[in-house]
Length: 117
Image 1 (cartoon, rainbow, N blue to C red):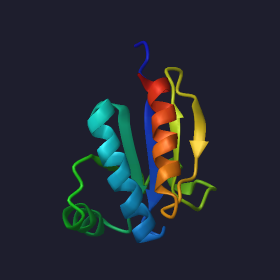
Image 2: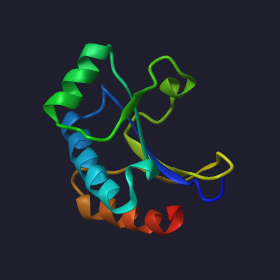
Image 3: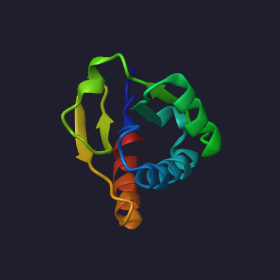
Image 4: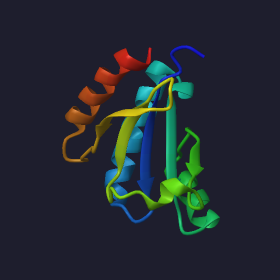
């Protein structure tokens, strides 16, 4: 499969809720430009009920995959982050977004848009 590059956004239930909410809204808007198949959101919640409540309350349309029981759950970065996963399953273009700088998040998304399309 050629050019199956995607943007991955990873966060955890222990991260700042308002930070994650802000970034998910930006990513959701971005998905409308590039297509949902170019975005992968992974997270971990204490339990399925917390996950479902979060998705329902925030009206999240993009799928969020629970990585609670995977090797990704033990990531050493203790903040939400994004990266591009390329055709060879190599992670690159890492970015740690900040809710206080939504313009920078949008600039990052526009930069990686050229990479994933």
